[in-house]
Image (cartoon, rainbow, N blue to C red):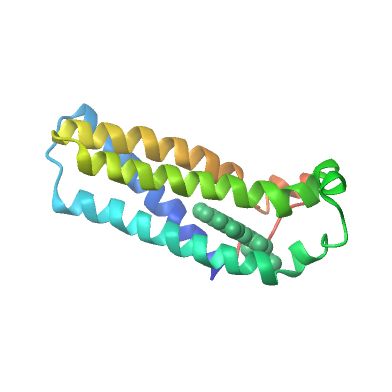
Length: 148
Ligand code: HEM
């Protein structure tokens, strides 16, 4: 589920960001449909957070480093990725998605709604994409996981 839900988040991020930039620069009206895209992104990201938190405590990958101390984990790039970096980057990305949705809701003009979504969601996308254990190019770093 965690592997597959990644694609919902990746697709929703790309589509919502593209729509936000187009809406921002073409001065379009912010519709109920635009709000739905942002809502689905918010829901999938929070669901992924819950699944990720459960995985963190039951994952064999994380458990493999349970005998190491924090100093040793921080020295080993693969251990550091699974124990610290993946979780912290993703939580940060999800917080930024949440803030982006709140800020867009609070904005009083349609243009400001699109602008805030575009900025926050792009920042979240950069952080989230960089912390996904893609089969390529993460292979060289030893943290690749399957596409599906
Ligand atoms: C947008 C948010 C996230 C995305 C896109 C994402 C994506 C992924 C992907 C693609 C994998 C590889 C799955 C596989 O083995 O096939 C993975 C693994 C993992 N993720 Fe996340 N993740 C996210 C958030 C989180 C969070 C917030 C946590 C922890 C709090 C977490 C904990 C884990 C753990 C423990 C694994 C290893 C699972 C295993 O044993 O196979 N993830 N993640």
